[in-house]
Image (cartoon, rainbow, N blue to C red; front, side, top):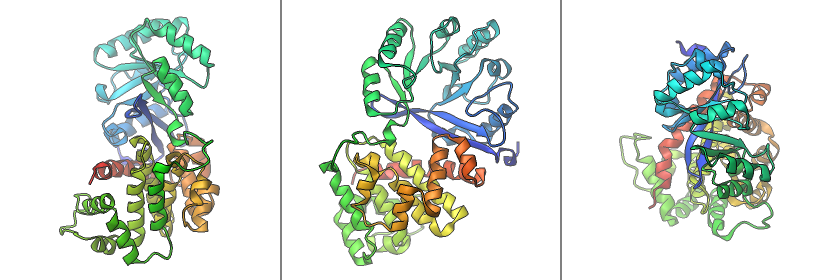
Length: 408
C-alpha cells in the first residue's frame, strides 16, 4: 500500500497509567479525515481497512514506543478481521459498550484469546451480554464520569469475583485518581495529569522555585551570551546534560563539543533557550515523567508544524508548546506562572488567548493530542503535516528523554 493512501488518517494516542503514574500502554485515537466513526474499528465502515493499512504502514511501534496499544473494535469487526496485522502481544482489543455476546462473536474472541490476543470491555455496564463476555476479557474499563462514587464502589465490589483488571477512564482530577486507586483500580486514563493538582494554591511550591528562576533568567530578552554562558555553567546538571545532548548520536557532529560557549555557538541562542528550558522543567520535583514526556511531544509537534506552515515562528512555537503545561508543573494557574517570566506579549497571548500563529498552532496541536478530530478539521491545515509532526515528535522525545533523566 502506498503512503499516499494514509494522508487523510488522523492518528494519535492517549496514555494509560499504572498506580505509580508510569505509562503502561496507549489507547489509539484515529479517524479518517473525510468519513467514518472516530476511534472505532467497525466492519460496517469502509474506513476500517484504510486505517488497518495505516497502522501497518506507520507501525504500532512508532506510535506507541513499544508499549501495548488499546484499540476499539466492534464484534462485527472481529468476525470479519480475526487475522490482524499486529503482534498479538502489542495490542489489547477493546470491545465497545453494546457488543452483542452472540455465538459467532464469543467463538471468535475465544479463538483469538487462544492465539494470545488480549481483550478489554469498554464503558462497562452490567447486562446479559457483558456477563457472557466477562470470562473472555482481562481488563474492564469503567467511565468514572458516568457514575456516582457510590455506584463505582458497588461495581468494583461486584467485579471482585472475576479475574479482571480494572481500568478507570475519564479520570479528570487528582482526587478522582486517588479515589479510584484506593478502590483497587490498577490502570488509569484521562487528562488529570495535564491539570494542576491543587488550583486553590495561592503560590508556587517552594521546591519548584529554582526551576522557575532559571526559566526567567534564560528568557530575559536582554541576556547576553556571556551571561547565559555563566548561568548554564553554574548549574552542573544543566551544563552536563547540554554537552551530553550535543555529543550524542542524535546530532552525530563528527567532532566533540567541550564547552558551553561552543554549545551556544553551535545551537544559537533560541535553540539553546529551548533546550535549557526543557532540561529545567524536567527537573521539577514531585511530577511524573509522563507529564514531561507529553509536554516534550507537544512542544516538538508545535515546532515541526510551524516549520511547515510558518517557519519564522518555529522556535516560538516550541516554547509555547512547552510552556502550555506550566500550570500542571507548578500547580498554579498558567497566568500566575507567566507573571514570573519575561516573555513577549505575543508569546503570552499565544499561551493565554491562542492568538497569533503560535497560538493557532498550539490550539491545533492540542485538539490533535486529545483526539478532538472535529476541532482539528475545523481549524484547518493539512492532516498529514500534523500527523507526521506528531509521530516525529514521539520519536524525538524517546531519543532525548534518557539524556534529560540522567543525573550529572
